[in-house]
Length: 322
Image (tube, rainbow, N blue to C red):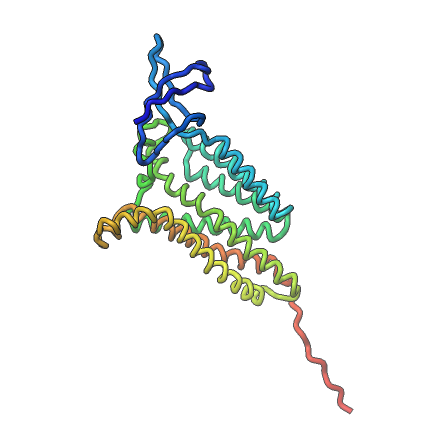
């Protein structure tokens, strides 16, 4: 434990120097040095009595600088397309923070408002990147198809594994709050997976839609069937790489826990039947299934939109007989 002399830099007690006892926790260590700025939880009880504790390092400024540098990197490398991507990223952040979360806190259905938010994010992000073109609408439609497939697989897998939304971390703390009903809270697991997987679904849809548009541009005489076959070859390649990425992303969040179970020699039977393993399977398979089926759905839509209205069939020239 440390005894710190801290000067308050904000609030009604700004400029006051107080003593703060700082306990060094293993999971959230704050080991300050002279000159560092900290976030202090301060309660004034009057008559010179107060309670104060160290909450965390002050990271706000660094977060803003890192975020700005990241946006600059996107624009510097991507040019005009990077600028559009940066705009879509900012819109996504604003939508989640100032639209979706307040709607849920006010008591709205998390699943309903999350689906509305994902539709808005998909439309605005893809339009800002690709403009008002046919492939944009194909990409948006393909992404929405992927979201629909995700919803289907989520409820099938959740029912098969007997998983409810109460498996979301911090659920016990949320239950103690009165901002929404218990039935609404069970939807948070569904919402979290959907938000986490939306980017992969959008990437797959954009890749397939753009490839289909380029194929049709290269050969304007392609009918629906040959265009569909060519688009599906691209879709299969996208699915192979994207599915692996999504599975690894979700597995990575559980990596430390798996190491811990291995270290304590946890039996395989006990491990595979744990609820947290079931939740990770639900996350990975439902999200990946939506992304996988998004690819053929986008190829189908794109082939229909870009098909040649009148297919050109080569005709052999007749030989003239003497």
